[in-house]
Amino acid sequence: MDAMPEGDTVWLTAHRLHAALAGRVLTRFDLRVPRFATADLTGRAVLDVTPRGKHLLTRFEGGLTLHSHLRMDGSWRVYDTGARWDGGPAHQIRAILGNAERTAVGYRLPVVELLRTADEEQAVGHLGPDLLGPDWDPAKAVANLLADPARPLGEALLDQRNLAGIGNVYKSELAFLARVTPWLPVGELPAGIPERLVATAQRLLEANKQRFDRRTMTSGRNPSQKLYVYGREGRPCPRCGTPVRKADQGDGSRERPTYWCPRCQTGPAA
Image (cartoon, rainbow, N blue to C red; front, top):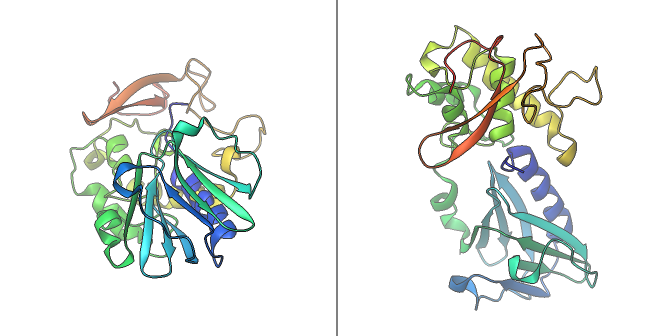
């Protein structure tokens, strides 16, 4: 799949990890990354698992935190202790956290680091307001988006320093709902649209945070159509019938597939 995990996916992952691990003593702790391969926290209790944008913070007694990030391909799976693991081959496992009842296994995690809980801001302090967090501040998110007026909307939405939690799916869907292309400079958005975009983003992530693979952006009138444009290249726009288009959009660090309607979304295109 060409979409990265979004903030709602990470929130639900944290929720499931917290339910499996929090308040229980570790009977197994294994980090399969060279820097932390010798670390051993068995015998310590897990205090909580907290999402921060697309980052996961697993806190242990003794003032330590495991920071992980899913990026494009990573995942955490939870199993009954002793059950067979089916998340991928063993060489893809990067972390194992287990207690007497449940075991969490991290597959293909590109970021796995152990740090002092007091130093968590070194890992997540750069993030903007978290769409699903207690620090959510819509006014600050809008100000961050508009700080660089020439920047294309899609790139601004994906920049986690502006607001944390939006990924490729939400980027395309939000631009469609705002009737502008993801390439429109944010400074050219019509009055009121930035505020509406931010409010819609928070509402949709909140609505989808417990749905996992059943994420829905549409009104629900057609149960089979859960997304307006994302992944629908060549299919009719649900608003005007024009075939949806797809092109890469990126800031030079990574190109991301982007979907839009060339007719009812105004602004420049790829």
